[in-house]
Length: 463
Image (cartoon, rainbow, N blue to C red; front, side, top):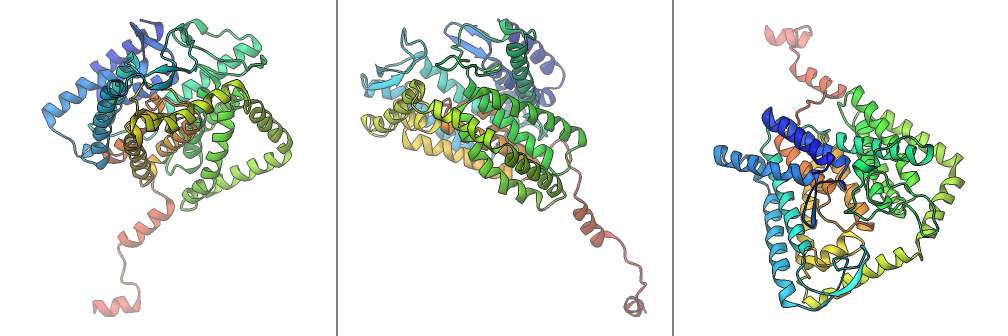
């Protein structure tokens, strides 16, 4: 067990012995701070903190179902879609290596591949079992959160905030020599990337590579923008914390020099501007949003040349590089190779792609991909209907958009917890009661305040 795993176990025991419904969601969030740091190494499987806490949720879920029955929050279409996804993915993963044995696939699960994607014949690997297990943990987390009496809409913030702080701390260590606990975070079971092909420094923070840092930084930025600018009823302290975390996320993004971050950030910006204006236009948040956007526009006008040079340099360096060509080729082969399995897929964990949707398409075919997409759509739509959960919806959208460009792991801890919070949160309700808007209280006063018979018409009616 690693030091990170020991800390998680201590906190887990404390949560289980005191008030699990209150503390388990926050502990799940805390594990997002170090999602790529192994907590427990069991044979070939490095178990992360998130997986460790998710496993502890399983007996709590079973106890609730046995003693209190199925809660109303579980009775939603997304639950059945998730079980359908599990059944389909498990069947394809179990059968495809036998039915299509020897089919050429792209994978890194071979000896001496050193983490690189190479051609190999389709066969069973330990990754097949691991990926099905991760999918099962996704369902466990979703169902467990549905058993809670309440859930805090800010539950995703602590883990992302700690992850951004630690990543900036590493930047200070790399650039200014500030002591950083590298030996407690980096493990030999992962392949780490923090330099380009020509030796240029790229910040990876507490993650395995800069693109993963960009994924978590964009998710943190999306959440914090909603909490700081558009969340109705958020406290002043929450807004200040969100603003600080957003600044750390921006710093980490800049020094990551990630092409994934540049492209995904541009796409999310196109989505965020009308969305924030729409959310803020119906509340007093339109003022901070307008000020923030005007400030960003002014900064862009002043520094537009530096911004364009920065983005152009990153994209220009990335396009045509060896890693870009390899990743593009793996996506193309994944999309074109689905015909070799007659549309079924090669199974979860059998292939390796650069981005999310080609990986799903190659692994579980169009049927499984459609089921996964349906879960995401149901989660985003359900969360966005409730203003309290706009932040969770923003995290999920940012994660899916970024992984659509680079990042094939469909059961990343951030994606799993964001899905679970979006599906369970609006169903169980928010533990923090948001303050009503001024216009809402005015409307209520109009209907609820007793009227005195002061007018001539009223006195006439009374007489």
